[in-house]
Image (cartoon, rainbow, N blue to C red; front, side):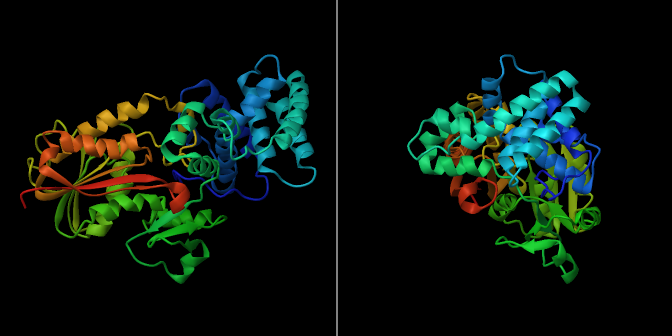
Length: 435
């Protein structure tokens, strides 16, 4: 499986998962590689993969808090393989485990250090983990009145990002967001075609407040794998439904998914349409392989075309020119600020200037998409960002452009994850005049 979500961890330790997680962390510390891409290289399945993912992602989520405390305990930063062991031990201490848990974590970390590093470094790990356990246990939860730096340290988030959110959302909401981002994400599945699973699937699928989306119960990896293989389910967070609902595709329409790869939203659009034409367009890249696989699962009456290109520069799509499509979905590249529970290392990769860079590209994508719509056509702009700079500001900027002046804003909303209970998303619906 290759979900963009966290697997529910098993209760018992799975052999080999811990050292694999340590090796992945070494690469994450030393190389500029996304955490989800690194996880895909792990040769683990089922419960072992779940355990490895929980450890690896958990250490990255809490990296800031653990790293800060480790730095206060050692004179020189340990080499990466030792630092990875300390990060995993720190996460296990934060995760908790009852009486004697700290001693077990320390003993296991020392054993792993002897195997993955050296005997001399095992002595360092033994001393540091003991002090780390004491320090983490004594560290208080920040009070209601506190500084951005204190929140950033405790909730393992860059201080500039905390300061940004405090200005935009206020103190209470920012704290809820920070707490949300530290929680392991459950696995959700969309049942397809739209409908209700049978009694057999109820053993491993649990209903949610969002129709068509189900919580995947732990310990049923073989059932999930079979359902994925035969196309009965697609792993996706319920937040992904918002853009599809906003576009509201109907049978017989001609639709462009303008930023389609890896194809989850294209597949959801096709399932809702049942019949029609869908062009799945995106710039060339590695994710086109998954897009091609998803297009094979389309309903038979939906004509699908995968196109490698840029809608801002293309002059014809499947023989049709601008002004001929009923709807366009622009699910634009963004900061991912609303999905940090899933994209665990985004907060460590983001830079303050990235929001502005994304916003500029997002306006350009909307302008490029606008010309493909016929009079009365619908343009849906969606992001997995909760920041106004990538949502309301982009919407307003687009309407001021020459391309946007022929459109009206129908609806605009932002789903906040700590309020909705699923990933965050911003969605705006425009309609072209002249119907």
